[in-house]
Image (cartoon, one colour):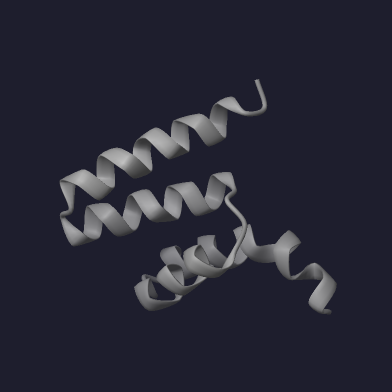
Length: 70
């Protein structure tokens, strides 16, 4: 069901990082809407790459994403 793709994207990226499928995580973060799960995935990718600048940006974006609902 193509209509479900964005609804299930968070579950898909979570499953990918739990299985350590980092190529899939990177693909999903590039092709999906910006959600809480995608923000966490970007944080994990930056940590894995040991990219301090990308990590700081990803954490800031994750905080903003979390604060949206408040």
